[in-house]
Each structure stands twice: as C-alpha cells, then as structure tokens.
Image (cartoon, rainbow, N blue to C red):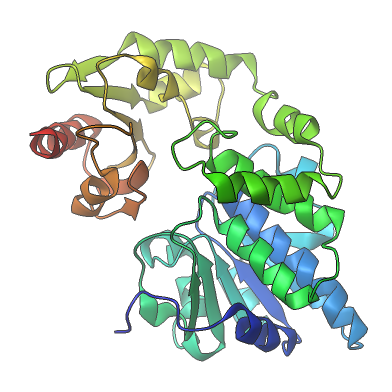
Length: 345
C-alpha cells in the first residue's frame, strides 16, 4: 500500500493527462459543490486541449454516482457528464481516469469495479488529509487548500502556461471554492482562497448568479424540514456538542429527497457554547446506515472532527468531516457523544 502524499508535479500530471484520448473524470458519491466544480473544471480544461491534437472532445467526460445536487443542470452542460454506469465505463475502457475531491474507497464504492486494477491509468487530485493511495499511481494533494477546485485551478495554470483560463472553467472552479468555504464564512478561508477566488472573478464569473442558483432555489419543504430538525436539537457534553437528527419520515413528509438535506444543522453552530455540531441523517439502507456530518469551531480547545470521523470509519478536515456509520441514528448518536466528549476533555 502506498503512502498518501503528492508523488507528482502539476507539470508532469498535466503532460500525462494531455496524452489521454478517453478521459473519465470521477468524484465521490453524492457529489457536492467541490466535487462537481473540480470535475467540470478538469473536463473544461482538457476538452480544448484534446481537440487541438485532433481528438474528440466528447471523449472527456465526468461521471457522477448516487444522488445529484438539484442545481447541477444550472452549472453543467448536458454533454459534459453522465450518471456513472460501471459496466459501460469498463466497456469504454478509458486510458486516463481522474479522481477529484476524494481518494477513499468508501466514497468511490459505486465505481470501484472500474478502478480496481487500473491504478496505472488513474490519478487523484485532492485536498483531504487521508485517502487510499493504492487507488492511483499519480497523486497530487493540496492539503492546505480549502477546496479541490484550487488544485485544479493550479493545474490549469500549469497546463496553459500563462494563457488565460476560460471563463467557463473559472465558473466551475468558483462553485467548489465558494461552497467548500461556506461562501467564504468558514475557518478554512485564508489569503490563498481569496486570491484564487479573485482571479476567477476577474475572468467574468458571477458570484451573485452562482449563489442564487445553488443556495436560493430551495423548495418550501426544505425550510419546514429544517424547522423539524432544529426542534429536536439536543445539547450534550456541557452544551458544547449539538446533535441534530434528520429522519426519513420527516424527509418524506415534506416531499424532499435525501439529496436535499445538506446543511440543515448549520444554525446550531451559532449557539455560543457549542464547539461541535453533529448532524445525523437516517438513510434508506439496510442494514441501517446513518450519515454523519461534523463541524467544529476554531479557537482554544478546538476539536479536530476529522479524528472523530476517522474513528467512525470516515474522514475529512479538522473543521468539517463526515462518515457513513452502520447502525440506527440513536446508536450512532451515543458513539458521537462519547467520542466528542473524550476530545473535548
């Protein structure tokens, strides 16, 4: 098993990618803004380069598995992506596989049949602190970046050698940077994030338009669901841990799908005493699986929720992490109380 670290340069990775004729771009299941943005960014970077070599731009495409965000059609063209079908992908036999925003077998389980035995033609572009290095022979990590889209931006700059990045590439990358920083509210915002975002805005990317299509298109049922979730708010560990439960019955009652439940627990972080917020979402899987989203505040005594997530079989960042945990919601809640309580001391 290899070591989870960068083992290539942007220049070498760019040259290797440009040699491909059939490029499959993947990300984790249930893709979020950074997953969509980074994969679309790679597609939009590589397509014109392949065309210049006389290749077929349609042979560079993103493939998404599981629930897709409601705003995908507002930021992606229909010919840029497909829903992942492993048998069709294997038959297509891509000579380059690019994985963005993850390097975890658990998050790639829907496409594992394609990846197994193809590490020599696979690369990972990511910003997470941990992953399964045996998936790919080429790994490029920017663990100090807030979003994988920043790494793709830097790849694009290396690929184009000083030429300006196309506005459509910039739009895709801005989606990931903005959403992974909570629209520049989270603690992962630093000078590099703002500098990268400013470069993209300079290309003509519209912050207001993207914010509207991504964040201001909720059905009324989502607000009703948020009210139900917050009404069951539980404080534990001397009110330093907020527990929120998203139940399937509530999701169905308000007419939503599981893919419309992200961010419901964010208001809990506004509570003065709360240092960690844990949102537990019931899934339809059997045996029961609970999806866990963890957030923590900066400052004295800050909890590294990536460590908590790893103890649950997941991973992520110090201030934002997650896991999919076998067990019913209440069983998983008890484990989180114990783990966070130990971390808080």
